[in-house]
Length: 398
Image (cartoon, rainbow, N blue to C red; front, top):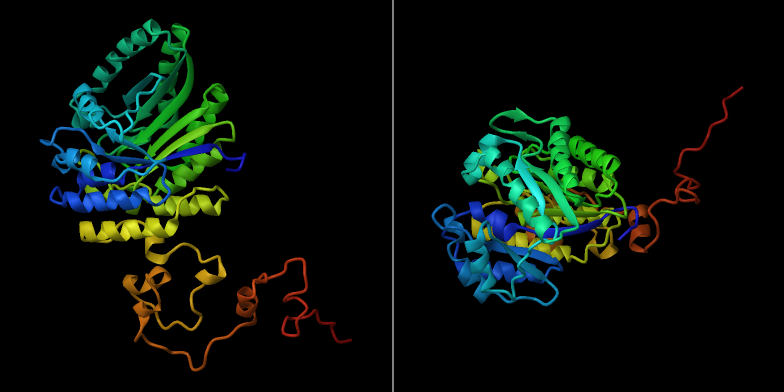
C-alpha cells in the first residue's frame, strides 16, 4: 500500500448489514453458498450475521446453522454482531471460526439524533451519555492507557434534519474532555451514518479537524450508508484526509445492499458496494488482494437470491478493461441490456444475434498498437503527433 494513503482495514458486511433487511425466507443453504464464495475472493474480514433476537430481526434467526455449515478459509477473519452479553455468549460457542472482537480501547459513543437512537435501540441519547461514566470508571480500574470517541448519525437525520460539523466536533470535544480528566489518551475516533446523510466535504472536514486538534488520534472509522449516493465519494474523502501514519476502518456490502428498518429508507439505504470500492482502490494504486472477478460472481449469486439487481456498478459493466485480454471486441454488435453487458465475464455468446450495423469490420491504428502492448498515445514521443494524418501547423499565405 502506498505510504501516502492510510492503512485501510475493510470489512465486508453483506451477510449482516445486507441480509438483515432482505427476505427472511432466503434458504440457509443459499446463504452458506454465498458466504463460502465470499471467502474465496481475497476479502480478509467478513461479518457473517448477527446474534440478535429473531423477534425483530427474523432474517438472523438461523445464524447458528450458517456458522456451523459454512467452510471457513484460513487467513480470513469471520466476525458477527452481538449487541449485548447474551449475544456475545451465543457467539462464543462458535469461536473459532468466529473471532470475538473485544477492543482493548474503550470508546464513548453517542447518537447525534435522539429520535433515531430511540427507534433503533429503545434508548435515548440521554441514556447513552449516562452510560459514559461506567465506561470511564471501568477503564480506569483496568488501567487502560488508550480510548476512543465517536458519534453515530453524524451527518444528519431523516427525523430532525442536518447536523453541522461544528456540532459533531462539540460532541467529540466533550467526550475527549472526559478521557482527559482521568488521564487516558484518546487515539481513535469513529463516525457513523445509518440514514445516508454522509457527504465528502463533511467527512474531509471532520477528519481534518480531528487530525489538527488531536494529532495523537491515528485510528479512524467511518461507517457510511449510501441512501443518497455519497458513500464511496465520502470514503474517498476519508482516505485523502488521512496519511500513511493513520489507520482507516471502512465497511461495505457486496452489491451495495443493506439498510436499517428504523431509518425510514428501507432497502434503498444501502452501503458502498464492495466491488465498486475495491475497483476504486485498485485505480488509486492501493493493492487490495481481492479478485474482482470472483467478487462480481458473488454479486450475481446474491442477485439471484434476492430476485433483483443490486446497487453496484462494477458487477454490471465489469472493471475497467486495462489489460489486452480484457478489451471489449471492437466489432461487437449493439449491446443494450444489462444481461448482455455481462459479456465481460461470461463471453460473447451473451450478445449473439444482436444488431450489427457496421458496414465493414472496425479497425484502428490505435487498437493495433494497444493489442501489441504499445501505448495508445506517446505524450513525449512521436505517435500520433508526427503521423501524416495529424494536423500540422500551417504557414499563413503571404
